[in-house]
Length: 329
Image 1 (spheres, rainbow, N blue to C red):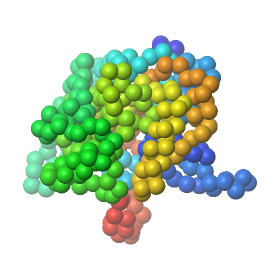
Image 2 (cartoon, rainbow, N blue to C red):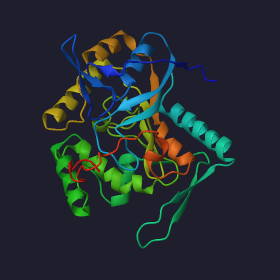
Image 3 (cartoon, rainbow, N blue to C red):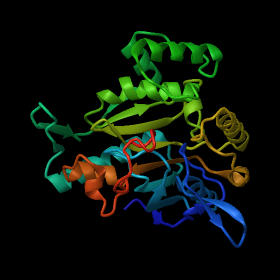
């Protein structure tokens, strides 16, 4: 309907790019080369836009070597798309229309009911999630300041801001595991105080540059980017932004990520010289985003666990102690 072309991109990458996540590592024996199972198709899809395919999308598997819980599985399915000559405001409208119409056609109305299992000593709960457009918006930094009654120091990249956020986490009992980078501290605070407000579909918008290495600078808010994440039932459903298309700025952002990786953040991005070369040929103004298919299926089928919508979810082997890996939930 909107003229998008479905494509396929590699699932094994020489450099794991397109997201901040810990990758799975494998080996290409013939080339004697370490390879990574893809954590996102983003960089390849943007290269296709550089090559002249103005609207592309891919539905496929991603692999992230991270924890397992009710909403996370190490391999999962997403729909990721890129749209030349659009920006994140276009994507907000597109996402609202796509999801609200999907819910309307499947459920017969804009409201979805979820039935949560009863917990020990508590009755079962029923939640009603309203997909009636337009969805609520919360600007990340100003929303956090309003919720906590503080003013976060600028610039966000400063040591002063890092120390201030450490103090906020300590004051409110928010645990953040090392390394205590500003990115990780902000992410934990947003999870605790903003995502917890997002029962109904809500856009958290205008993320800081330090949290968004692939997103374009905000046109009117210094230090922020034109990015949004959509949350529903308190979980992330979609991540999208106006794409950064300046190769010089992109290299600087990758360098900042490399600094975080050197400090011990194994989810920080690698420097991808091939992608920077593609940007030097010229990426038109573009917007793009990705949506988790499994979590969407959970909502539409009244399931609380991602395992209920996967035929073969990852499971801990029988006999393995639950505390075998403290990072595995």
